[in-house]
Image 1: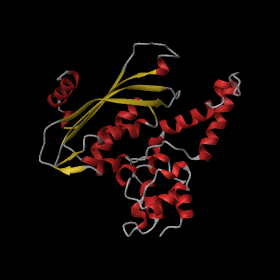
Image 2: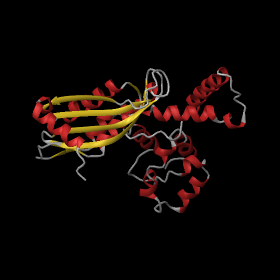
Image 3: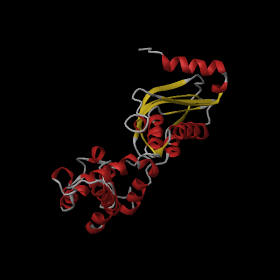
Image 4: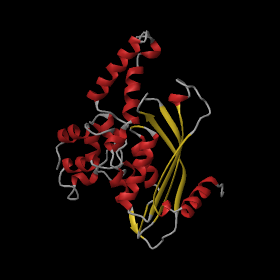
Length: 268
């Protein structure tokens, strides 16, 4: 049985999104005694309803905490206080240096909001795209093209730290294994939520799928608009950048052309 004080201490170290992951599954099966313990916890901890933590299914709460922290699906919605405060102080100084009054009503919470936004937009550094793919690979004899197109992308240009956004189109030809369809967009998000250039983003997605899934071929095309050349610099509002990468059977012109035709077509 985990002591309440240990429960609170360990749970407070978790982002709220992770703390609440089990809520839908476990709500309603806690005993009143456990509910009473949780009611004494901070609100961010109270969302966790780990009935099985108090049973033989999970020997210690520390084991459970470690499992959650290692999850490839970590989604940052609550933040490390120390890191957030450090980034917040830097944003506060930037706002002051450009000539604004950081104590003004509309700006008092801006440094903290900006810090949390930056941590959210770069959370890909703490996620593992390989484990995401490996977690949903299934043996299947299907060996024709699989395409997921029009996947939204939002990333930050590493040169000016301004957004670039658009769509990704990904295809692969299975070689004994398929992967859960949602895992392709998840992998894209992992790489996009880092400081990036579109060329490397395309390569990262391509190589991750190729090296992990080991298909007969992979193709990736990204079309994106870059705020760094739209709202500053050359200020070209209608420019779109397209990058592509091909491996295996997609290096053959007929397979590549089929893929490019399909992502350009409106089949619905």
